[in-house]
Image (cartoon, rainbow, N blue to C red; front, side, top):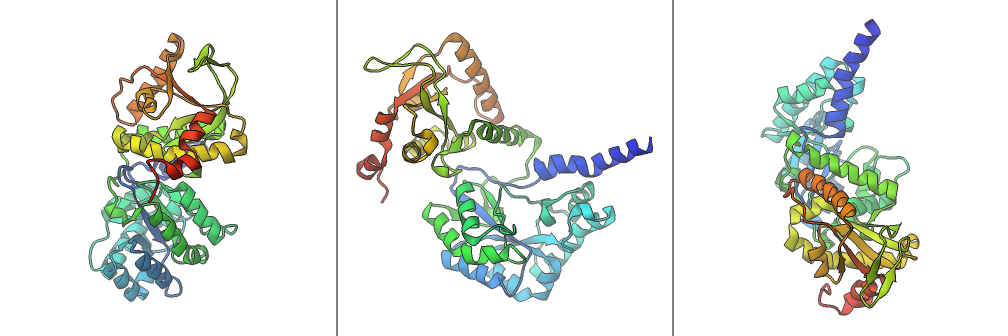
Length: 409
């Protein structure tokens, strides 16, 4: 009986907080909405006079602002760096009084750390701290209760730069953040400690990349829709996990290798029978095909009108993938099975009705997606939207992009 009580105690103290808070981020701020092309860079473990000034210099040069989650003792030892952060428009929030993983602390120590860190950082800052990110983003029940007692909200991240990893390099961290960046993301990097050896040299290049892609770089508190994740938003959070799992199993990847692309694409065998393309060209079942899926959270936050404009741009990346990704070389058509056929028809796709069985199956899944993402749960009838490989590349490929009406300036 004693071992059962011990197991139940561990589940309540570590297991549930790990699952609900640390993994699902329930009650934490982890990202904003995607309707605005902005993201929040956050830096942990500072300030350090050997590395933090270089991070601040890069941010100032790029006209970017960020949020620093600072260690209380370091903030007290270097108030000039905290003052500079505030004067240059950055956010300053609490990281820890002692940088120790929550699981390696006594419950009393884990409870007290958010209170001590918040009080000490607030004193240096000269104004109240509102956010707290525990070391390693790790939680126990005591950590959650400590944050509540301190009157602060937990802050997590949606993109981990992994600058701290021994195998990481400056170029690798830069490429990773570029690939994973999306509107509303919260990125965690480090301005001190092991991560700084990668972040300091790569940061100017990363800032240039993100600004060139049109991102506004703002403190976490200014990120649109950055609110604690509630039970109401949990279906959306879970569905994004389902999307990622599906992508891994099916070999589907974001077009262009960018998480902020409106489309994800992978190679499949064409699943339908009896389809004939315009011009009388038959499309046999089993034909190698590039199937694309929509980035649902981005579509919902942008709305259909803005998504239509973005689709024209992002199809260029898909066309490039058709020409460069080895696994897509054999694809003879590009297609999507969705309720978005009217939108895709304006982009040059043929529309074909599905069988009653396929319509029921896909409509049911579309309704689940719409419920999870908070849009109208009554999905229109899904249809096949399809275009031949040659027609797609001619319309959206590199030459078309250079001479077409959506040329970048």
